[in-house]
Amino acid sequence: MSDPVRTTRLPSGVQVPVLGLGTWHMGEDRRRTADEVAALKLGLDLGMTLVDTAEMYGNGGAELVVGEAIAGRRDAVFLVSKVLPSNASRAGTVRACEQSLRRLGTDRIDLYLLHWRGGVPLAETVAALDALTAAGKILHWGVSNFDTDDMEELADAGGSGVETNQVLYNLSARGIEYDLLPQAEARGLPVMAYSPVGQGDLAADPRVAEIAARHGATPAQVALAWVMRRPGVIAIPKAVRPEHIRQNRAALDIALTAADLKQLDAAFPPPRRKQRLEMI
Ligand code: NAP
Image (cartoon, rainbow, N blue to C red):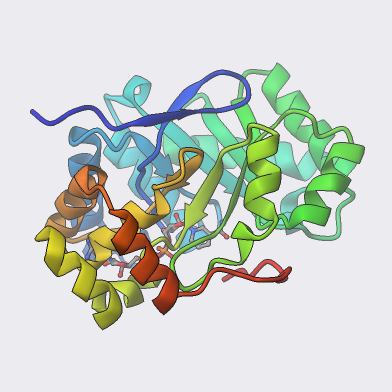
């Protein structure tokens, strides 16, 4: 049995795994449901107990897949879902959350995120998230795709309860290292890195493959180990193929050397100035 998955701490004190399971593009085709459920169950078996989903994915279909995968083991899972900005009004957020709970087959979401900023004033969404927390329907809340100035505005809008910001972060998208990551670290706020394998692109990158070969690993594993090298960063790769799930779990055991990191910096230069937060 391998070591348990390393954890990091949310501002509220809850420990969450630094490696979880993404679900974008799951629940879009019923013919793939069995494989998707099996992939998530395997990931949970291997200790990747943080599951990231959203009402948007598959128009609710991904939440149905997650619901099937976590049935009977809900207490062992840290469940993350997201409300669309178009639903993020005071009443709309509550309604969206209740619909997500039904699809997920549970009575609570551990961490509920505003998927990205939309037209609803932040204070209104925050009020809805606080009400959902008070009602026990969500245990924590956070945001996604928020740049540094959005985080400042959130603080001004009464958003002191924010527990994470989920953003694009991988070797090919390093902009957040300039300001957003330092800002989050200064506030003790973990960042959830989405698309950590570059939506699959980094798994085929020869520059990463060169380093992977030295570790007897795959490029995707090196890309993941690199994202998780910073203590407050949580990676949520999505994988359906069982060998990918197993490889992702094993990426936690890869210790990149100073020489590896230098070579990766040369191939994927860190930002030298502010870059607008990228999102996909
Ligand atoms: P990703 O995790 O970087 O890449 C997923 C792709 O990589 C899939 O095609 C998968 O293949 C492949 N893959 C995974 N592990 C691999 C491995 N070990 N070796 C080779 N290939 C591997 O991209 P993502 O799905 O965009 O991002 C991850 C999660 O972040 C999403 O699923 C979602 O939960 C979240 N997300 C959030 C936002 C947001 O706005 N908040 C935006 C994007 C994503 P198979 O599936 O065939 O195994």
